[in-house]
Length: 415
Image (cartoon, rainbow, N blue to C red; front, side, top):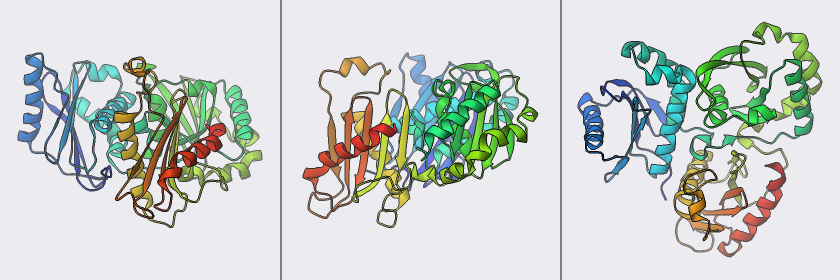
């Protein structure tokens, strides 16, 4: 199993479907965005073979060479996205979901009308520049995983009930149904309205905040790709502490100026110490002191019905592999088990067709299956929850399922 994102290059092309005119090209190498551009002849060939297939009523979705995977996807017969990846471990599932997120990001910041009714190519190119930072974060080596899982990255605050109560009170005071607290691009607590946001905006909005430079306050126009793709909303953000933002999704009201210091002080000043304890939660996801087995090097917990997930590679942080490698291993393992072992997530077309024989657990050993050799990866699905663990070589293979079951039992009250 390759390490998704380790080495190799990735090129993302966006073209107007009818004319084949390139709208932008974004690239990365080893998870780091670069300015490398593809030759126009390559862009023309990639688009030409896709259009040739369409003219023959053949849908070309993907192709694979010795070292490169290519995926094509058209949206609303107006935009064609093409991605080429030579990164080790790149899979069609990963690249298809990345293209879905990229188009969602384009709609989020430009609106569907501009993308489906292209009147002026040059103007659209300029408008799409607003989405580059967010799109580049998908191509980079992000600490988040919602782009792949299509679940909202979350963290578990130590005093969640107190924060939830304050958030609900603040939302009522501002007459706003969609409010959340976001730390490092991950949702900490949110109102019921915010949790009801559809996909992909539920993933994209906190991810957008994580990709923007820090600001004390923002009044940011956004479209909701699922809920309101043609009429913009306002995303208001207020930084309570560095890395921790209060987010409101609203219409014309309230004005940003109405979120005055007195209102913020009333609801959040009494919880200042609790908020400070939440700032380090970003990459850790779990409260300090949460008991995890010593062999666990990383975990990914998904609630497939709520569309939320927890990812941490912080346990035993001073041991090999590095945090970046742990994330790559978990991403690759998620791709493997989702595309080959476990049934599709709820809501997908194949969901009900594959309910007869459903695997409950699987494991993988990277290297020889011998004592103290090779990292262990184990996945377990119970009801709507799916748990993936990365374990040290010292963890015996015969005990993997038992350890995963105990860990899932301990994590179940959190998500």
